[in-house]
Image (cartoon, rainbow, N blue to C red; front, top):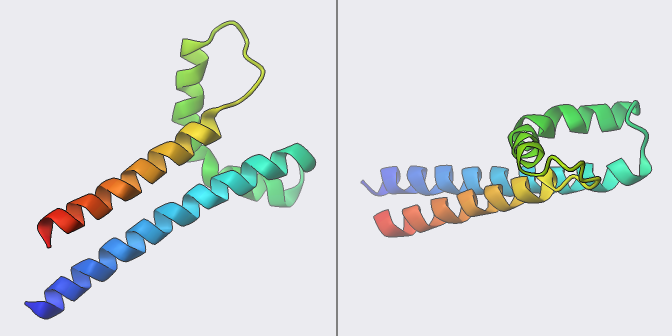
Length: 97
């Protein structure tokens, strides 16, 4: 039973680490978008990686603010959602074990 507990612990740890790394990647992409051109290969790679998570938030913001807001807050919302999911996983683990 102790081996199973350790496997579950490490699975939770890796998942939380991956969520935190993905949130960091979103931050890096947002910062790079200020300095790099969109057709830069590195920027295209980062955008391809983080866009599936950011796109739903971007669509939501487009529906809520139809007045043509110039700032894209979807990276912030995506990072908040990933952090909440990460904390929820930690809470569930602590609740179970």
